[in-house]
Image (cartoon, helix red, strand yellow):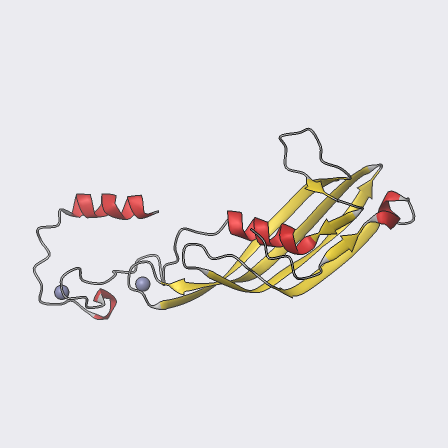
Length: 169
Ligand SMILES: [Zn+2]
Ligand SMILES: [Zn+2]
């Protein structure tokens, strides 16, 4: 699922050997190889640290970037910044656990995959240019944010319209 052509691995062997108790990283411009919900992700950055807390290794960090898509109601282009926090234990091998852990295979953490998967699993269903975007007239296609049109849209029960909006989320 992930196009692993980039090399963004963090070597934690010094941490495991006790030579240091903290490793800091900051990766900018990570690729985002996914396509979902017609949202593109750019300026992907992942910064954080891996610390050894008396034998328990944890990774904490922040993933930031930009979502771009057409507004889910009026189709105007929308770009929004996002910020995701991550704080997970790191295991040296595949752990028999249902909990979220980061696997450091060969004493390395694949930071690009970690950032990409985290962003992918939290992608919104759609973007809106603004919360109260009025959308397009279903009859004539006019952008109702720029003013009303002459169409009679009364046959749409506003309660049902609200429901339809709800199901889109
Ligand atoms: Zn809109
Ligand atoms: Zn209209």
